[in-house]
Image 1 (cartoon, rainbow over the protein chains, first blue to last red):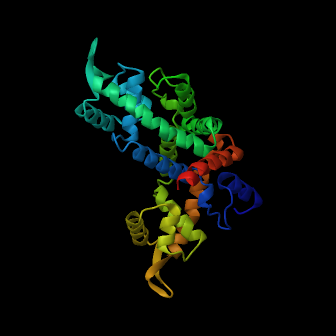
Image 2 (image 1 turned 90 degrees about the vertical axis):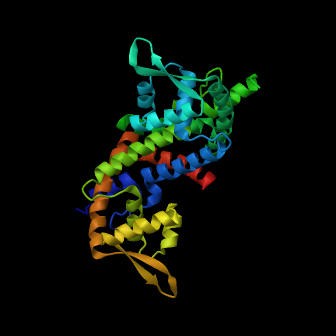
Length: 162
Length: 162
């Protein structure tokens, strides 16, 4: 089992491995993804301390702002949020007076989602705070071209799996 | 506030934005990181169903296997795991008979971490399963060069923040 063929496959899969094949953490895709994601989310949460806002709430508000009237099932599916989590997230946004469910015309069982007036003002401030956060990230990557390269690579993972 | 200068900064920060500056989710770094990370972790958990093993447990076992005798505080810091979470994770590995804490020589308050015999066998199987998972990821990215490029970009985020 430990012939040269196996070793070269190990090298491809995980970069440098020791004699027993145990990988170096620094070469593992999932490990690096998680470290980067946690740091980006922490910076996001710090950036939105004044509002406050969690990343999933940001995504839902941004999507409703860009496309008012989407059904809640469409938004949940598009963002990859589980139905139960999405319902409680929307409950929170409604309680804060930022977004509302309206009965969809022609289909009484489904709801379309809209921002309130207060939600529109909230989103304007949210976008300003988000810009500063995102610009820090783009700067740390080295520029917009590197941002595009990173997203293209992540899309390969998302496309292959999702 | 809505002059051309602001628009071009928006374009750099978040790619295409609508008139109100609300970003398209597909261009947001943190959003894509999270989608990719969740998919990779799900594939990881599915791959390790027979053992079973969570990503953080994998990391700790791999690090102890490569560097037996490290102190638990060093491992927690190196992997970015909070102390309380690390203690309960190590408790679980000890209960399963895979790893053990030993009093560190010369410092009775700290513990060094080691694999048991059973832990060594477990890690050998873990590495085999991990290889298949990681190879799928590398294939979805397009090859080892793309893997290296992705990790280099993630390291810029981690280095700038962590």
